[in-house]
Length: 631
Image (tube, rainbow, N blue to C red; front, side):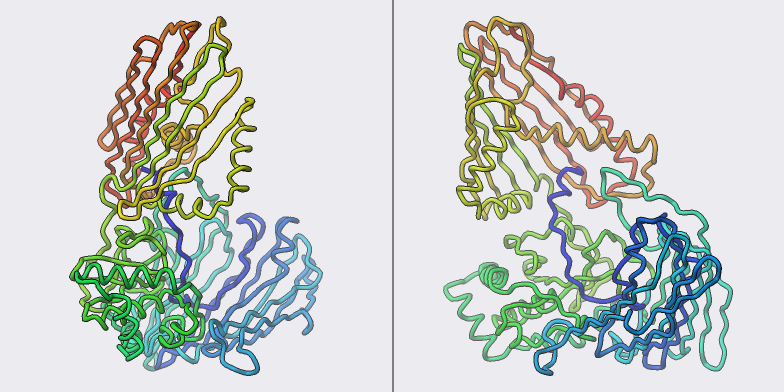
């Protein structure tokens, strides 16, 4: 079910940086520029050091692209990389060259105070401002980049892709790699022009052209990424993903050593706890509340955790620091655990060639509890974000091919709306609505609403009333959070004048005012996707999952209003969804019950499942317009 995927918490922790050096500012739109030249020439050293030359030429095609393109930024690690710009210039259509003067270069350097080492980042950003840029000009830059301290000793992993939305008139990637590193590669749609061995090195060259931009397709679903969807090349010296995990663990595991400070802290956290699960929860709860997140981009520190005394003193760290601290605290209580590399991205299958770029996050695994925990997510104990569910993981300890995090349990996500609305003789209406959530959606709603001030609530009430178009009052009451059940509910009370006019024929929408109409939202997404596919067919797998949406409404009408008709009951089924709607009329009372039960297992679905959604949505959509007719 697509509706529930939007409740996942997006993570932005970076574990590993991809090579080559990153261009900080991506040009603004696929058809606002084109690459007339895109050359990368890399020489890999015996110890996996790198010496590369990068030559790019970008032609400006639109006026609204000028401001973004006239600045080009290169970001690199000051301690592990060296960058030198060979030339940068603007070339006019008539061939005239205008070099970027020295005062058009801006350096932004991250460093420590008074010469001390930086705490979180040693990144340098070099920004080049091209002179006199106009539409039709070509912006040229050539720079050299040396990697003196590889992320992993004697290993390298590169993933380079060419987005289909961008025009590349002339692209070339060349590598010279020592045979002793035993590098392997996978080519995804490039033309291989050189593949030979010479003087103990492997020489590889690929070329690529894309003369027309392929516009990106928008869908209501979140499509899954696969390495190879876009043309490109992947290279790696890692024999397997096990070696990737071991290379990370070789420097991370020693950082999780149990010291007197760690043991003392762990003992204080688990005091009075008997069961292992209770101890793990106590440590987890303390860490998510007391250790904040801070990135680490200091040379090889981007893949090596900080020392724990630094993390504890400053009460902050990145995902590797969090995972290392958690592992150490558990070890102090003789609880086994492992760090686990995972992708906080849209990649759900590991490419055959082991590349480190697919794993950009670190969590923990407690084998005795068969439990994955992410202390950077700040989710309640035992809950993994939707983004990490059903993902391949690389366990540092106890590695096993094919290991994945569990998918979200069936019906983890549940949204129930219950409401009662009473219409008075004068046509006014008064009612109450209770919205109940479970799963990650409940936690997010709780986190959002728990710190609302009364003034903020009052403004929200006012906005709801104003948007209704009626006179009256709306009051949203404080929510109720149950961490053990992972549930959250809140109430809305409303009174509206002149909601209907007794004696005049009319119809009521079959949902009270201010109800979220969650079923209609889910159905509308499926209908919208069908409309999009009539133009751009969905060809890729998408992110999905199970869930239940329920609505239960009761309308009580006054004696001076005759109920002439209520909608017919509806049932719609597919292989993965069932929709039911029941309308009961007794005296002056009408009861409306709707349920959308989605059993899609997830975490990903093929395009055929979208057709199953549409089977239900096409019938349910008509029911969304159902009305109670009165006079």
